[in-house]
Image (cartoon, rainbow, N blue to C red):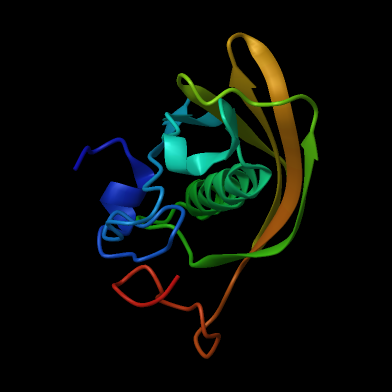
Length: 159
């Protein structure tokens, strides 16, 4: 556990496939705030490939979904001056796969909130490998209230 990793700090018991630290079979992404952005460095393994040497577009979608969701939650927490992020869900997101993403080394995702209100944030993100942008994403993420199935999901329940 690292103090600057959002998932480790705020959701260590989460079982989410993409971002849950407690899911041994998941991607276990590690997002961290860096300036005005939230950054993720992640290295794919052979079982994340669509074909030899290249990452599956579905895996790329999961990376963006979880990383952008954490970007929104972190932003909403800071905007409200809260000590923990709100529980957020994906309202929509769109991924553009610009060129094949190689699986032989680290990937870097960089996300930033471009619009927000008290309970939602629009996030834009890019994925780079070997110094080239490989994919991009734009999505809307919404804070949920008690009664929503995803409320308190980071405390050991399903993602």
